[in-house]
Image 1 (cartoon, rainbow, N blue to C red):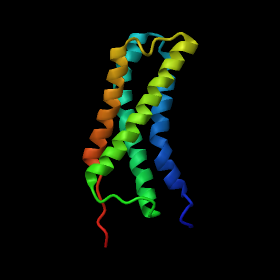
Image 2 (image 1 turned 60 degrees about the horizontal axis):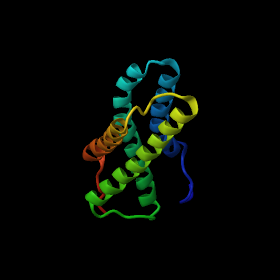
Image 3 (image 1 turned 120 degrees about the vertical axis):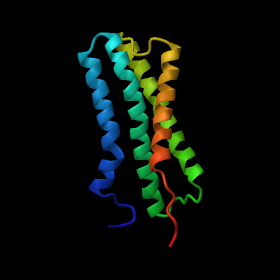
Image 4 (image 1 turned 90 degrees about the vertical axis):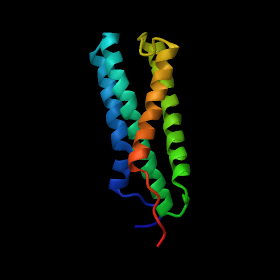
Length: 140
């Protein structure tokens, strides 16, 4: 294996969890026309979406560290990087929801408060993941 190649396992770890959250959300949009029922599912989906993006971001950073593209000597900086990537994904997700509403006339973003709640839940998911799983590897 060369330094730039990825294994199937790497690709799976980078994309599977976020893809599953996306597909669950998409399926709910199609089968639950009642906005209130979707709204109840919205809370855990945004939280677990934050966890899934944090998991993928952490794995991407581990791959970059193995290839000596980046080095983290401080756990806090790694957490800031991961949570920052989660927040970028959360903002892009909210843009996706906005466009879905505009194109298909749905109401997945009923208010500004809902959008902020979604962003905060994604960030909290990323923070929970980081507090439980992010470690700095010691050099040997």
